[in-house]
Length: 76
Image (cartoon, rainbow, N blue to C red):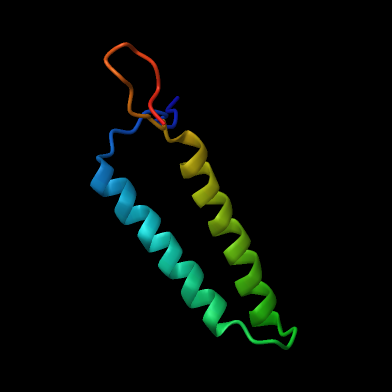
């Protein structure tokens, strides 16, 4: 039985490209979303929510590093 690959090796550039692409798609969907509650508008809204969920998953999985002093104490 096959399983999903749970480990990915992406570079910082790859992740940046994916994030920018997601943000562009969200922006495009938001600009085409009309104020009227049409079927297309509701679909666009649901896609935006789904894409924002993917962006938040990316954000939550990042490891944020802070600059440290040579003594090991964080700066700032």
